[in-house]
Length: 384
Image (tube, rainbow, N blue to C red; front, side, top):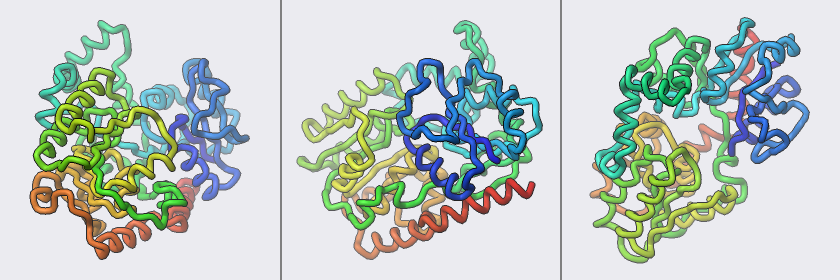
């Protein structure tokens, strides 16, 4: 039996299904919830092996004792709630951490490497919070004045409980080892297949429009202001500029600044996406885009990037992003914004480039391979 720590997030229903297929009847999913959320299932469906776990009040050790054949715990992202519970576990269990991105790249030792000049320039609060976060003493004072525990300190402590990190992108593991060196073992595994990234009805669809999409969420790590400032001289009238802002950890002020700046630069062509939408509705927008710009300096937006590459779009990233190098090393046609955009601008990929990209993605994320990856991961756990 494997115990999973999960949130009711938008991809976790698919993750749950994939683990159930690879390890049938031997998964227990703890869905971390507050008392006000009990009985509400947003993304993950209610089923027998999904338990709503009140992390603020329930005793994790008692729960684990009631699962005597539990071989390991897999935490899907090292969120603060998961970290606090890991530190309370008394039993000796093998703990696997599926790296999500923010649980490595948003930590204090890396925070100074996340933002472009324009994005910092447009947001005074971001400049202050970045400065405070980088300095342990200032951060300690801040949390003391707030009457809270330093969440980053808790996560750093939880790192010591981890035995093995899991990701399909070894570059994430390498960044973690550089920032927080420890004798973790590493397992490489994909988690979602290409049908889940794109949606089955779009598997044979190609992007047919000439619009552009910037970033994936209402987070300053998308470096929206740097991208918009860079593109302002290149955008012809009539091409829509989509900017997803319905998801992520940015605040309302940041969102309004992005919207106001986008409207000022691109006028009626600027289209902020402010409401949650189904995967199908969102992918329909992606199919209208010939170009996607994901100018993150960290691994982020991989679902968007993989889906858009599959659909045939030209993807611009930053060569400061480890995910960019992961994709390039696979042989995919992806491009650096500052060095490649002057040559290719908003042009589409050739059919040959699109086909090569699809072949590579299918090789990495086809359903059979993803299932084999997860089975291999589970066998490794049981054999430890």
